[in-house]
Length: 208
Image 1 (spheres, helix red, strand yellow):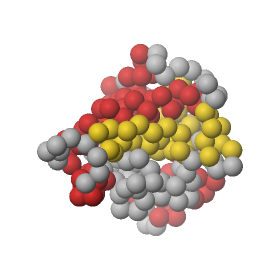
Image 2 (image 1 turned 135 degrees about the vertical axis):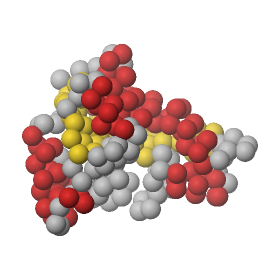
Image 3 (image 1 turned 30 degrees about the vertical axis):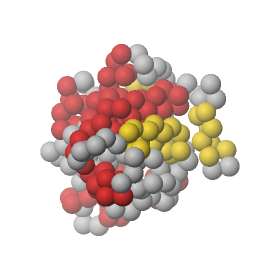
Image 4 (image 1 turned 60 degrees about the horizontal axis):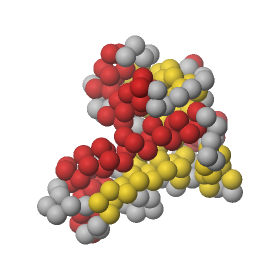
């Protein structure tokens, strides 16, 4: 059984997609053991409560230093002994010590086809604003392992989504969520839960 901890800063739509997939059986051999947010008002925490999932808020704002926050943050995650940590719209920099400790056991969903529109400063609506400003015809989402860089870890899954005439960043964001993010994130977790993902020479390899 794959024990998963989900980290989220906002509404938690990707968290909901994971919860729904676990409950529907499309993610197998998996249970969500905890949800952590840096934002006490994040609706994601309510989603967790509704499904009986342990949850807590740990905010950097409550600590005198980032080092103190990092220590408490890692300690909280360690308490749940996760096999996999999922970043589902988590807007806090992951401590290097945590990346090292959970090497190739932390995944992130990013709303673009990496390496396009990724890295520092590209998150949320900013990704879609940049894509529309550039005039690209295809966007999408990527699930990747987390390493010390920003959106630079081994890519597990990607799914393309077409840009349509008249798209606004908000409309495009919703389409990318519905057609890509909410599909490939649960799929990636299921693959990992069933031992079908490995990392070789810095690349994720899927065995079917």
